[in-house]
Length: 68
Image 1: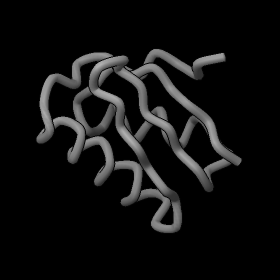
Image 2 (image 1 turned 90 degrees about the vertical axis):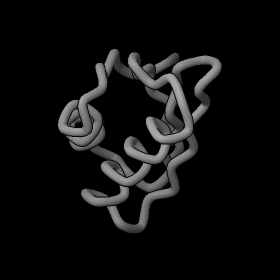
Image 3 (image 1 turned 30 degrees about the vertical axis):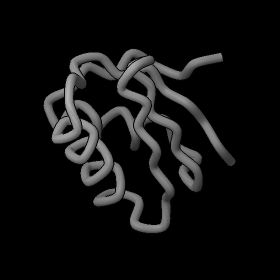
Image 4 (image 1 turned 90 degrees about the horizontal axis):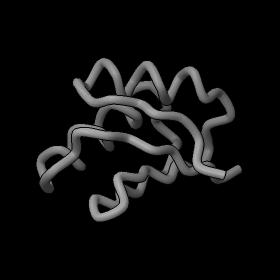
């Protein structure tokens, strides 16, 4: 299942890599795509929004929730 989340605080490629690494660390089989322009992260393969939220927050960014 693919879900997109709003994440604030990402401003550069290094930020994107940090978020990707954090989510992949808790969900190694997930596919993570960061859209810096829209402050969004699309994740495929993770059912638990809380897992994504915690990974994003632990990486130092603000998890704003799913995009509908």
